[in-house]
Length: 305
Image 1 (tube, rainbow, N blue to C red):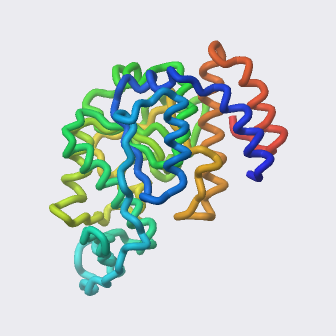
Image 2: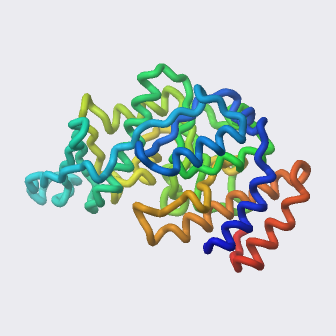
Image 3: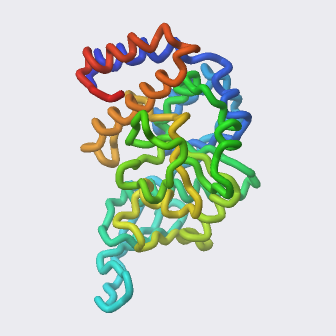
């Protein structure tokens, strides 16, 4: 997406933002993962203000910065060791002393490891704060999409399967016949993305008991890579992908710094989700929907909805 297309996209989406948008979350605390000096923070703060969020509801959590990780190779184990990767590595965070062990069968980059650790630490912070529920987001989340929700988050929770621990509010695969709730861990291969997800106490406990012990984070070997797209879904016993509501990434704020080759896919997935939300809320924002569809299908040449 070029600058011209982005301006067209913003012109369509900005009018949807209103001061009541935050009410769709029903007062649930939001924790946003962000590197301290990231320029995304100020952009998201402005968006949060436009949506009516108070400073106490939306709080930034400092991310583990991949640039501060020092890699220490772990001694290779014998091939006979059960489900053990011979190329796993140990990373030490130079600032806090946090130790992170990549247990995946495919070695990840320091940025990917840091991203996964950031999510675990954000969950830890929410748990330590005694929150019953928390909405964890990455700092490129597009809060303006809240205005397109037909349901509130409270409505979604009431309809969610019993004993749920986590609800994914962004997914890369969006189709009209998608079930309202589908297994998150079973759909990782075609529903990647952890831009935004809701956890209750059970979900927080699942993630922390699986990955964090004291000041060490250790990722398991039951998925191919220790990236957050796999770590979080596989860390929750009862996680589901939600199709009726969602918070996708902002198409401009999403830099694709970790996986630059995925940026275009990220953009397409974000547009697909917003497009679907707009279709679901024709009665409230019908004046914008047809123009939005035309922009996606004709000006940008994307077939998404």
